[in-house]
Image 1 (cartoon, rainbow, N blue to C red):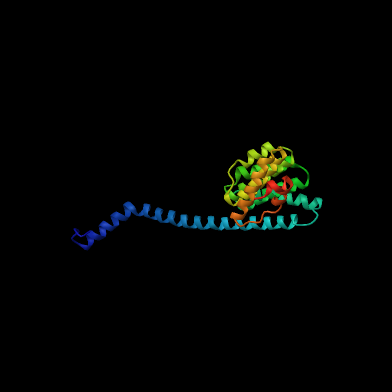
Image 2 (spheres, helix red, strand yellow):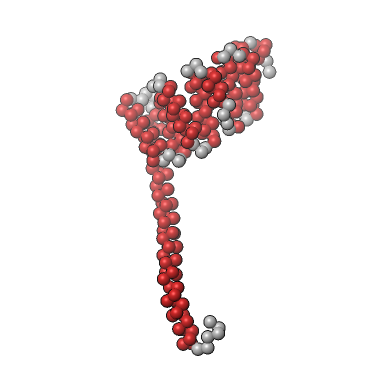
Length: 219
């Protein structure tokens, strides 16, 4: 522009530049504006989805928290679980709904359905703590169905460090079912040590050790 000698030449250059580039400039502005609006709309959508998931989960908690779950309430609970897992499957609420689904199945004495629900949580959640918690509950269910070997295999999977004491406790129960008393004793001792290390209450483990033999249970 500095080389142009007259205002007319400058004006003509501007007109020529605008003719060549104006459409692309406008398109760029439009795209940028659409991007901002789209991002804001996406954030609003995400916020609305999170609120909807939270409301459904609160309804679910309110229902399953009752002392006795009537048939219609149980049916409504299952509907809410389905809505949460289908519509909000990538949220923490879906993970927690899956854990509740397993608990309801256990109360119905449908241990196969409970194991399936826990398996879904383990497979789908990206959250290490929830996955570990589901594995511990699955191991307990496997013990309840007299399958201690399966429980031990489940406990060999990755478990978050904050739940190591609980894993050792359940592992002791599995060894006890297999009549591997010394292994059970070692597992219970480890559970107590880990609980103390993490400053966690772990009830009943000392009693299990005592039942295996008072002298051997001395730490």
